Length: 136
Image (cartoon, rainbow, N blue to C red; front, side, top):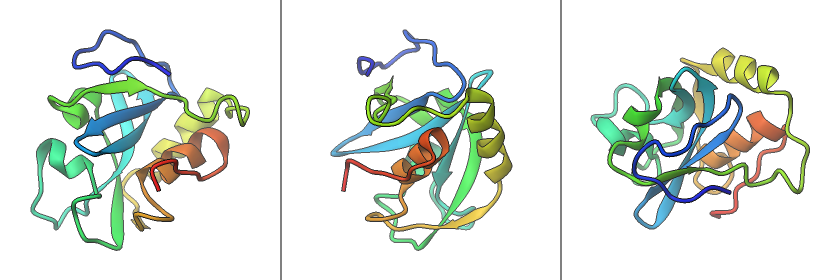
C-alpha cells in the first residue's frame, strides 16, 4: 500500500488499483496505462462534473457508468495512492487481462449499490476476480 499523494510521486503499473481520498470515503479505479484509469462514475445525464463526478457515494443512484479517464482528471486536487489492497489475500490476475477486461467495460452502464456494487467492488473484481469492499 502506497502513501497518500497529492502529486504523481508514484508511477502506477497497468492493473494497479488506485484509491482516491474524498473526505470520509474513498473512490477506486484501475490503472490501465498511459496515464489513464477505468472506474465507475456517475451516468452522463447527472449534472456533476470534475473530481466530484468520480464519486458515486454522494449521488443517490442505482446506475453507474464505466469510464476511461486521465488519472489526474479523476483525482483532481485530492490525495491518492496505489493500493492493491487484497494482494495478500488473492493472487492478482495478469495485468494484460485486467486491462483488457477494464477497457471492455468502458461505456457500459452498471448496477450500482454503495453496499454491494460500488467502485471498490468494481476495481477488485477486475484485479482479483473477486468483488470486495472494505469501506462497507
